[in-house]
Image 1 (cartoon, rainbow, N blue to C red):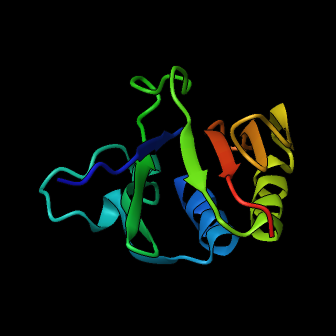
Image 2: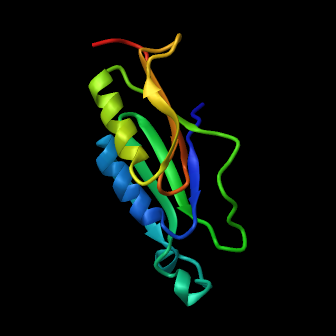
Length: 136
């Protein structure tokens, strides 16, 4: 069994996934727009360039997402995507990259359970927890 986060965006999925690809050093392995979908009815013309499905491979894990039509979109709440990183320098880099133009909920610092930990909501409205259990 695999559990993979599937994130919904308010029309900016492509921008978010290109940012995550750079931030995490992953590779986008799928990015299909509504206009590329093999279905007869493509929906509203303004949605042809919006993302129907995206998949980012980071190591052996997948992060997936899509743009959600406005009438179905809800702000993300009630969960965070958690990242566990062994390298404190890399963990700090990723935390600060995700936090840029976002909102830091808990600054990146030492806790009783981790060498470094922090929580934030990125510029796309996605909540993240970055955890580094080991010192360098």
